[in-house]
Image 1 (spheres, one colour):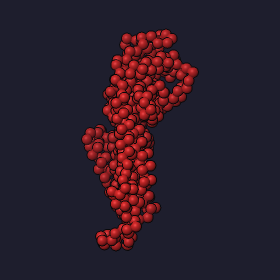
Image 2 (image 1 turned 60 degrees about the horizontal axis):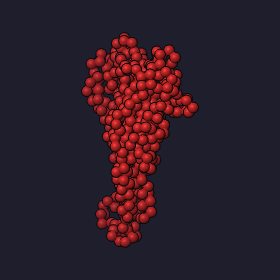
Image 3 (image 1 turned 30 degrees about the vertical axis):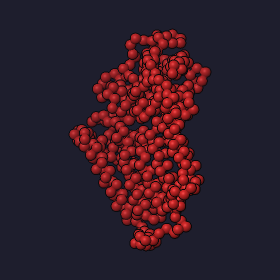
Image 4 (image 1 turned 45 degrees about the vertical axis):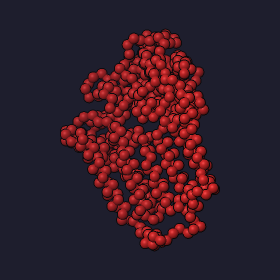
Length: 447
């Protein structure tokens, strides 16, 4: 079926963009889609309809779902804190960290429940297809398999905290924390399947005859044309053109960036300080070059971090789940709030990502240092605060031959500034964003 070549070519282009932006999920999704489209292209629609579920089930092999993790972690923290308060336990919460009388707890990536969700939906979809015949029951069970692991993970987190609290932090605080969680999840999924099996539907009689009579064949009119005929020879360009384009772009790469120098004097009366204002540096891995400076104006101090990336690939890229302000296991800092806003930076309005960081533990009685952080991406001269737009810009600029030079700009200030930390950051960027942009542009031109 020649018309399938058009969507195959479109999917090949999507794969190319995903590889240019080093987005694993997009390239893997495009690969599976191309495999699925190969079946109607070579074997026809009749065969495709017979194995449609098996073809669609291949999409579960694509590791999607990581983008849901922050939201699921927030939901887990919301439910756990609410359930603890309803149980009569006082809770003080900041972001994903909370304190109860018996100790400190935090919701990390492993507590998000994303693994429960992926496993439940995958097995639940297969169970629904094999045990039900009506579309309504199949859809209903898939929705149940979607909701049950989310609620089960909330209950699991609450029960873990309660076990630790009631046992004086002797239970559910080490390896048994994970063991209890998986055992609880296994019991919940088993009960879900046992209940779902009560409404199972037998297969239609026609399918039973087809299974009992293996000699029964698809009518000749529905059989695909044999391979090798002139009108069935598939051109190679849907597969080879993306790789050829990628080869040309890879051979046009620029040399890596050398050392970046930060100006000692910026606009206004901002000057580079010899000592950092805080022992903080964003957790961005493998930048081509980076520069950290600590300008100050009288008593006001602002920290600046620049992370520059060029010739990005899957191990060396700006936008990554590993590149964050603070990692979940950071021993010195924790992120307690995040948001986004539009700030007036000089004559322009720019979207920025904001966060609040807290140092030291809440339980040791020490003075708690807090930082307000603003983050902006610079993608080949274009500013954005969105991970998705940054990836799209990077892929497009590289595809059009303009390179993939990108950088992250992070500015931060202590929250206890007299003039207000956000006003201080806005003032600093209004005075110096043009100088920072010129520095990045100069680095890009040095290719």
